[in-house]
Image (cartoon, rainbow, N blue to C red; front, side):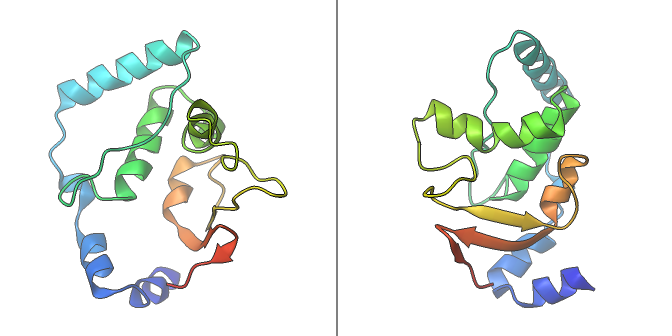
Length: 140
């Protein structure tokens, strides 16, 4: 019910993109297995991992690719908390973006509210309820 209410507020092009079955995108098992092995080895070695997917107009979809990447990072052995950090605080730190990546007074305040607890189940990040950009709630 909630998903349909949210979906109905999206522009037509966003609804069309959301209707695409991202699981139907070609994924080569050897490549995924190799990437998981590499990510697991890097993580065990203490190398900071940064989440971020190159998105094109075709694949992966903006947003959906990041959610898939976070699932893959947990499959590679990161905890959900480490995966969330790999998508927020760690890139901010490595790119010198001192105004973002964490929640604190005076910072940029880009926030995503999700239904569920992504620290227990990383797929909860897909259930976006609201978004704030620079402290301003975004209309849908």
